[in-house]
Image 1 (cartoon, protein in one colour):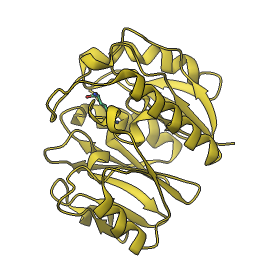
Image 2 (cartoon, rainbow, N blue to C red):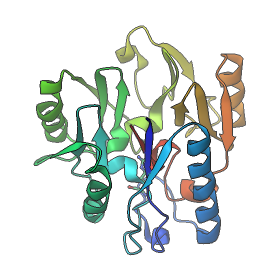
Image 3 (cartoon, rainbow, N blue to C red):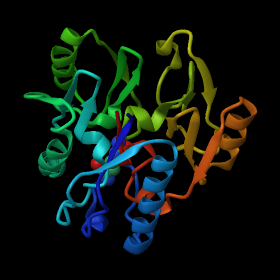
Length: 251
Ligand code: CIR
């Protein structure tokens, strides 16, 4: 069974963390309806939806991806790089506990948005949110289960998965401004359209790619490469610097 863990949009979302974006008004009602559509899309792609308890005072609570790295054997509770986000962890842990043994990072910082898993290799972005110590801590927790950790230096973007995501078996969508794709070995690399800086994040599930409708030029590149794209409007959560992967933990 494939689970998708999600969490409701917080009333406090307009006070979210922002690193590379300028604050714009967020329409909460629209954000909630887009989030419901996201949940429906995940369900239609075969996921059983798990909801962490609402956290109305925690602005970024909807971005559950950053709180946990879940593999078959365990769920690693992260130490998020933004201090304001640490309180989100408890509610996510409660939702995961029935499904996985939980282990916790005890030092360093790491956001789940910096972790791209390809089989038993976890590529981890060294970013403003994730530091060397956090990467070493993830390795300490996951190496005993047979996972290899590869550090990826990332440029001027929030997370590794702002710059690269998997879009098909053996294929990655990459923003080459922010990382060197050579690190991914023989994966086939599809570059985003240069006019769409933030277009490298999509969520691959059951052979289809849930993908923002804000990036039509890159979508055309994906379709030309044979990727089945499911376009999705997530304009309001994008204003909170959220992408498609960050609103769920799929395991
Ligand atoms: C933050 O800055 O932490 C949130 N406003 C956005 C987090 C997005 N998370 C993700 O892409 N994994």
